[in-house]
Image (tube, rainbow, N blue to C red; front, side):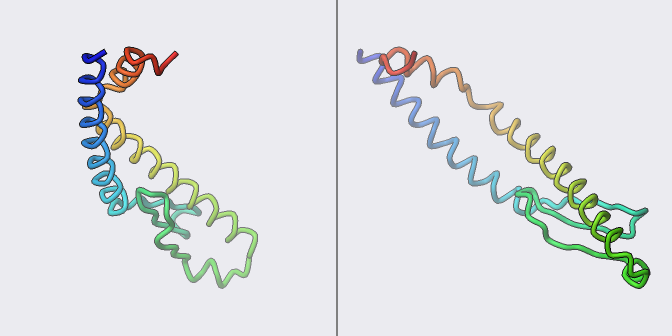
Length: 117
């Protein structure tokens, strides 16, 4: 029983460390930028690592064409491309963070306390 409590204390310490790392990760993702383009560069969008749209540039000649449907389609394509890059980058950052944290330790500790199936 006491060993389980000791393990729980260790687990709580690791959880606090993980929380600190998560805050650092969020700050890092907020600062990362990914671009997506469509229409041979006629539409360019920028998103951050938290998948927030930061900027959208549309080539003036595209606007002058007056083809609203094409502009809408290109904006959607560029945003989706940028978001996909951002998700990939965020996943890589998250994998690095989780690499130092043994998630199986949580299940083992909870199991020793009778709190896990």
